[in-house]
Image (cartoon, rainbow, N blue to C red; front, top):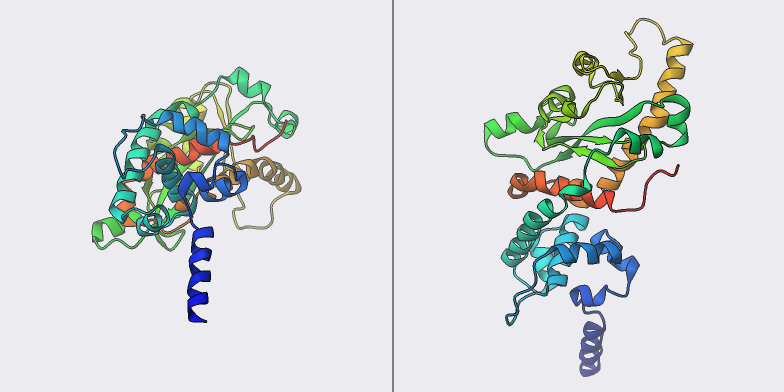
Length: 306
């Protein structure tokens, strides 16, 4: 009886083995679940990686890309990735970092600010009706990190808004939902306005632009208006009485179109590396991680139909 059980277990192991890309190339849904991309995007990314050096016992280029994307998509540890792909945690870490270095450069043209003419041509109906001059919608988002041991790092990363240690970055989208700007990451202590001013975002603004934001950006209004543009935020409630009916209507109108940027941020966080607690060892690489995730979002089908 014990012999039969052992035999059954062995057959089960053989049938349930994971063989990297070989196990995924004809399973589009599984590829998207594990790597967060379609087969078409996978092949495009594969062509951006250098040709493999054929040596014994080395991972194929396809498996290296699978490992890299699985780290972004699942946010799991290098030891877990190593177990999946049959390599050590050190090898998994090396493969990830090398692919990150290459793709963060190779994908640089996938996050860009298009011409105002292109923005106008792709303007969704709600914007045409209410905000025809809108060129950008901005927001800041935060990702949690492990607790740093260094007091200076604790001070830089602590976010009072989140009540913990975070990295924060600014995202800007055009009205059709394409990411057109992604800042470097900042410690959670920095305000939205500081990041907007420091990140280089304001250099994108041109006369006649309309920028939509939430209430966290009041101090950039003067700078934007000085460029001949307009910053539109929801009306403030001073705490004395309720907002007027007109102010309430304007708040709802702004919220109805600003939800676009929230949907894009949701797309970013399907890459669980951005929704998991960031290991401190990954923090130095997060500028590249955030950028690559943004580029991958732009490679997906449009989030907003015209």
